[in-house]
Amino acid sequence: MNQSIEKIVCNLVYLIKGKQVCLPLKLRGFGQGWHNGYGGKVLPGEPLPESAKRELLEESGVRAESLEKRAVLTFNFVQTDKIIESHVFWCDRFKSEPAASEEMEPFWFYFEDIPYARMWPDDRIWLPRFLAGEKFSATFDFLDELPTIGGYKIQEGLE
Image (cartoon, rainbow, N blue to C red; front, side):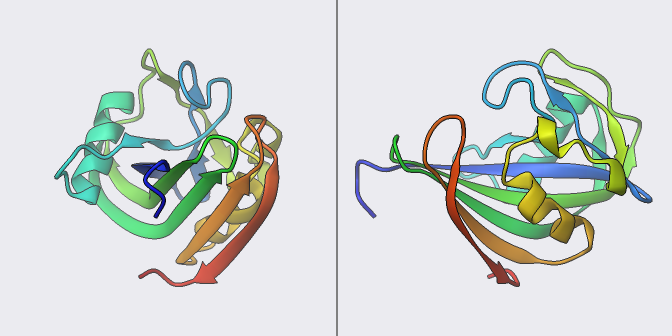
């Protein structure tokens, strides 16, 4: 890997109730104004599931009782030489309902009513597979900060 490339490892958690998914609205920072899952950067030495539980608790007040890793998404930001590797977790057993925070406001959507127009453009490609129970890895190349997808690849299964 080129030393000038910055790689950031993150987690992403989707709360699930039956056929509904919580897609909080990001109120500040990276992805502001878009619906997404809960998550953030993995701290040095922090195991992935613990980082996902920590971020979920910090952003929503929810304690995960179970997490299932279903996807690994790699986002290449071509113009900035930045790579984000996001480990995506399914959480259908949790304590309490998500609360609004300074960073996120929770919204529940039925799977068939997901607001893809107000989400990252890659979500419409991989999120239906995730919600259908598939496990996979995917790589997306973003050409600019809009972001515009230049190409993508999806592989079944996880490493």
